[in-house]
Amino acid sequence: MLVDIIVQFATVFLGAYLAFAAEELRQRRQTRHWARTHIRQLSSLFRAETQTSHVADNVLAEQLAALDAWLAARTSEDLTGPQWDAAVNTVSARGPDLGSLLRGEPVALLPPDLALALAAVEGAGRELEMAFGSVSALRDRVISLWAERRVPLDDADRRIVILYRSAVVDYAALINQAVSAVNAAMIQMDAWAGRGRSAEAGAHER
Image (cartoon, rainbow, N blue to C red; front, side, top):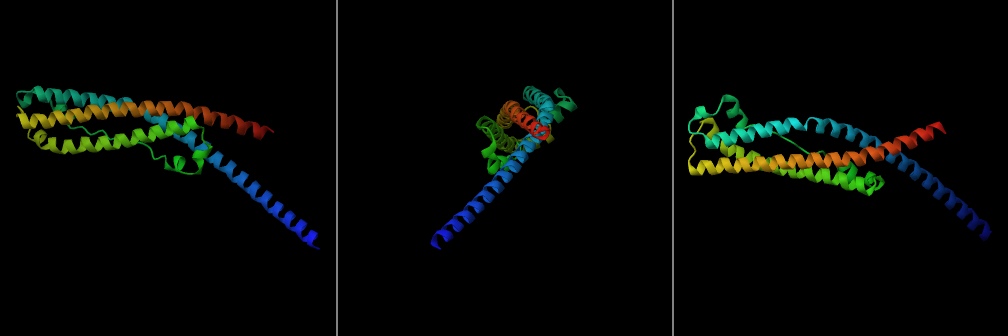
């Protein structure tokens, strides 16, 4: 009787374990499918963003040229209307929220190089947000001078405009770094998602 109970218990335990393992495998496959689908979508979004990144580059280049003209000006007429407008342009660049991938179960399914590349993208995005905060704070200090078309600038006002220009330079550099991080991540993303698509196609054919 004891042997029968033990065998029955072992059989029930083994059946429960196999059912749990099968369910875990099913969920893991679903999670991997979700992760690959999400990666493909992210890659498409990243590609669209990087293809328009030159717009931000152009705006920031015009802004720096306008600030240089302001610093060198002797009268307000030394700057054209578009230059005055460009001097206080606002370019807001933000990084993506990758928390659902990098701080959840899916990160365990990603190749290490891809996970690191995505973490670099997120890190670059955080640096952008901090830099944008600095640019905005200095812009708030410059805007009253701009509204008055203050020319020529005295030493104190000149220092503020110079600080603002320096913040814009740093911000432009961080945008370029973020774009480079995104481009590097897209290589990893497309490679992994592409392998997944091939595997899925093969599974359907079988």
